[in-house]
Length: 192
Image (tube, rainbow, N blue to C red; front, side):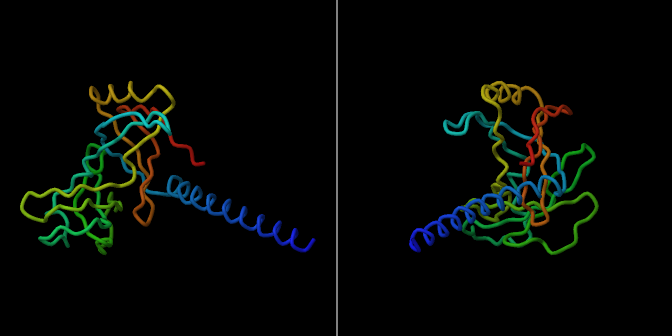
């Protein structure tokens, strides 16, 4: 009887730990969407289907290709994949554009008016030579859509200008809030 109770208690504790871990992940994402700084980014489409998760639009951004000369602490050798913090500034057109970068840690200088710092990871194999480009992944390169919507939206992206509204947390983590066709919001991401 004691053995049964012990097994039951262990099973309940393990189940609660798993539920708590999932809730922590979801709450962290929701906190960024709710409290993060909003930035508007132009998108460049890539392709729309994932067999396991359904239709999606794969997105590229102007901020995904950073000139190496914008990164203050980039040296002549290509590092292994590393964290990069890219400082964005809001332009007159309403979109946010890269103005500087810092490898490994935030730049350390206070953010100015209409500035935000987004965290990404770099690809291996780049160099800091003249005119070199650093490819950056921010974790916001896919946006999942309702079934059957991906191909149509991808086609429209090649014709018209689309953008996303992203929220950036204090640590630089980004989440997509909405996919936009011009000024029209097509899809919003729910908090939970």
